[in-house]
Image (tube, rainbow, N blue to C red; front, side, top):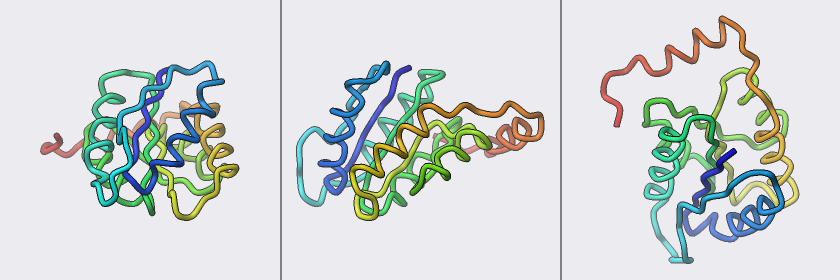
Length: 149
């Protein structure tokens, strides 16, 4: 599985921790920026890069990190086919995958420590979507808008 990961300056150190953690997995990890710590940089560019990569690479997953996780979640969800979920526990990560087939995990650099972050990422990557008709129907309705990027 390909994993695309991005962060702003607030998530930069946590992204480095995850890049190291995921290097020991069976996944191919792609760093989508920020590539250096620049205080005050915007979350938009890495969120857009991850969303576009995940949208083009079916079956891949994305991980985004910013201070609260709200900005990257909102930005990623602007793209058709992206189902970004802000998760702060392993339970929420599992439900995001099982119920909503989330393909981008959004994490807060401010509210979770490295150990918890790794546990959430592991749960997100290892949990499969439960392919029920009602869930597929609901997911398909997410892309009914006509003005997506």
